[in-house]
Amino acid sequence: MSKKYSKLKITAYSDEKFTKKVNEGEFETLLNPESYIFKYKVEINNTQAAGTSANAVKFTRIPPVDFDLDFFFDRTGAIMIEGKNNKDEGKGIIDDVEKLKKVVLAYNGDEHKPNYLKIAWGTLLFNGILTEMDITFKLFKPDGTPLRAVAKAKFKGFIEDELRVAKENSQSPDLTHVREVKDGDKLPLMTFRIYGDSKYYLEVARVNGITNFRKLVAGQQIFFPPIEELS
Image 1 (cartoon, one colour):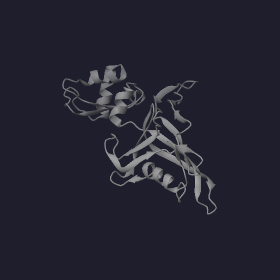
Image 2 (image 1 turned 30 degrees about the vertical axis):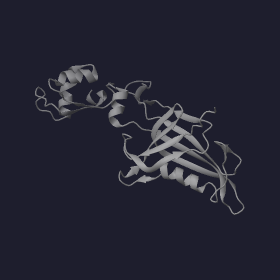
Image 3 (image 1 turned 45 degrees about the vertical axis):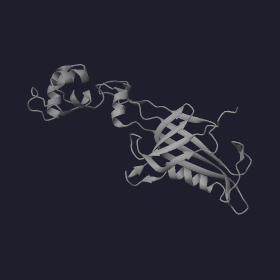
Image 4 (image 1 turned 90 degrees about the horizontal axis):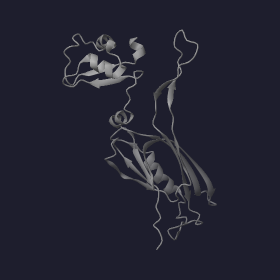
């Protein structure tokens, strides 16, 4: 018994939580990719501190991952998929390319933004949005109808804000933080948790316009700027 041929599939969603599928927002590749690329980066700050002779390398953040993927289109009839000859159907690959564009490039009118995309194939599962796509047409019928093409697409990984905060769990004093006051919270203790030293609590109170730091209100949002801005 032969194994089922698994195709790379893209599903479009209108919301950042990936719960609302876009109508006709699915695309399956005719030909699976030969490879795909994940690009990871770590952003650092090389700003030289006053009075020093060398740059202090400081971690800033890990930005969303970049994902590169090529899509191959062929209607020459030279390729067999699931026992069927992938023949030209009159319009060559135009319909195939337009279907891909509709899913990954279409502007979502309700949300006023491009679709959020889920890309799945085998062990691959990627959530993101399209940032760039180049389509090269390579082979044509005598009347100019394209029969073969490659679409090179670049995607930016997406993590909703709440999940990003939970995933990074960043407590660095060199970054900006916003914390919500809970019952029993005291400003000196909250300041200690962020900066590792409670001595900045008066500066934090000043930045936030807090006149009575001993009486914080549950649910209140407090802004903790980078430590160098307080020093």
